[in-house]
Length: 115
Image (cartoon, rainbow, N blue to C red):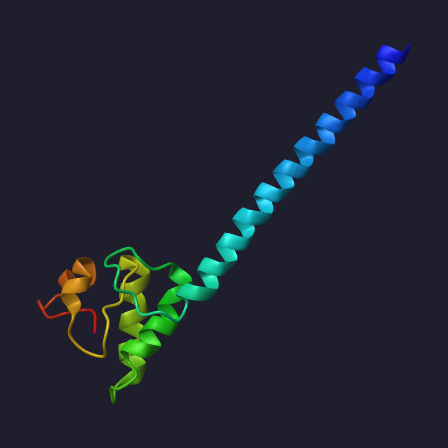
């Protein structure tokens, strides 16, 4: 009888320890994920094509289109390009070589689609 109670206690301790380990690992993953989200939202992407998440497009395009007179069309096309390419070049103008998809997307007439 004592060995049965000992085994049950051991199993209970192992189960609680396993749940605690899983919980701690899950907490670390969630903490790292939230840090990445907070840190990268307002950073200028220099990582190239595919380096952004879709939720980062709007702030990056606001930055990119910040100095233009044509904000509405700039923001529209920048967000369209960013959602496809997941990249916005640094600066207000130029630097499109950082994002090949963004750089190579052309209009029907052959002009640049992305600002």
